[in-house]
Length: 237
Ligand SMILES: O=C(O)c1cc(=O)[nH]c(=O)n1[C@@H]1O[C@H](COP(=O)(O)O)[C@@H](O)[C@H]1O
Image 1 (cartoon, protein in one colour):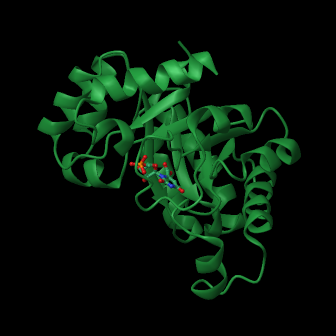
Image 2 (cartoon, rainbow, N blue to C red):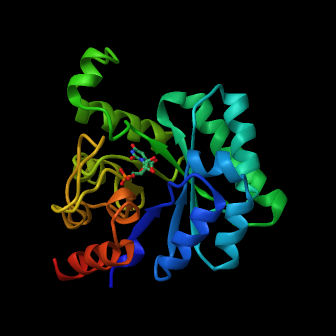
Image 3 (tube, rainbow, N blue to C red):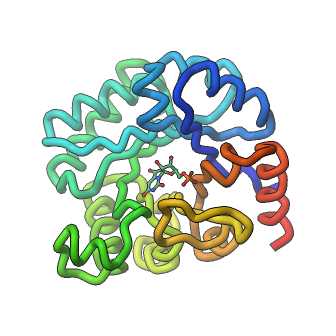
């Protein structure tokens, strides 16, 4: 099964629900801890995932001035997580400072540095919202590409983008640049607040290294079945 390309978003409110889900979905090897769970549990959830030999995407989406994001990345890197996020719109100086600080934090703790990846444009933003609410005068695919290139030039390991932009980013940023796609939806799942989605197999075919999937699995009546179904769809396509 190609399920090592799927990162499941552990978007639950507390430690108890997180442990219940991790235990239920035993064959998931890569979990994403985001703002909701980390704000609730702190690093405790990371220790639990590590004790179960899971890989961890710590998705705290840092967005601040260079000194502050550097401090946050230095602290986060000490946890020995696999992936860590920062908004590309923090700017070049912040991205460079964050990259350096993540290396320093990991070295201080004697762990592998995380892959630092930049959010290009949240997958909940449509082309219309980009233009009319955020007042960005670029076309959406061009904006996402510019953010990815800025991240790459600043020394980051990769970017988070919607599956609709991944082919273009792969072509322009090359094969060594990690591309992680949330906003992925099997045909049978609700889109919810995701605006620029494709199916899991389309996203992989377009060049994504990893998919981030939450509610289609975690909010399903039977999460194990939903997980199995997505894994099988990826293997057979
Ligand atoms: O960084 C992310 O993972 C992320 C970036 C983005 O642009 N869009 C996005 O949906 N995400 C995360 O990916 C997950 C998607 O969850 P579902 O929409 O439930 O599949 C959530 O945990 C989001 O926080």
